[in-house]
Length: 192
Image (cartoon, rainbow, N blue to C red; front, top):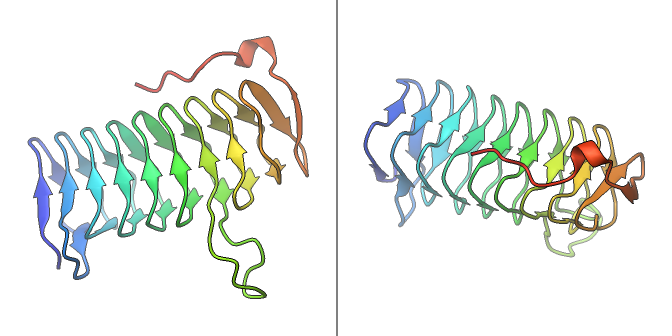
């Protein structure tokens, strides 16, 4: 097991594992964390204050998270990933290696982000999506490798994003097309 360094007022359920694997760098978790049963957080992970998991979460090595991050039940973060502050990843979200997520981002249940353009067929390297500050991703949406969802953009539930989504727009459909953001959806998320 890797070393586990944590701040004050942290709760780790008995059958959660923090610091899994043998890594040179410890797992670091800030103040006020709650890590629930069945969750596994690898070594070489750095997490800010007020981190909360559901049950059966997996956070792989090389992941960095800011403050006030919620990781829902059965969500997988496959490592080498950067996640900002005030982020809500709902139940069963998949975040692949080489993904960048900004601040005040919401990702709905069962959203799937991908990082391999042609799985197994070619070796072009891995490039996860980039989700900029204030963006929302609806339930069951799929983001293909290398796409950027712009600041304060909104991806509708069930959409398949194959191209970049400009800031302050709505992406909807399969494949997703970009539309003006309806007035009720304008502005940034306030997840704090």
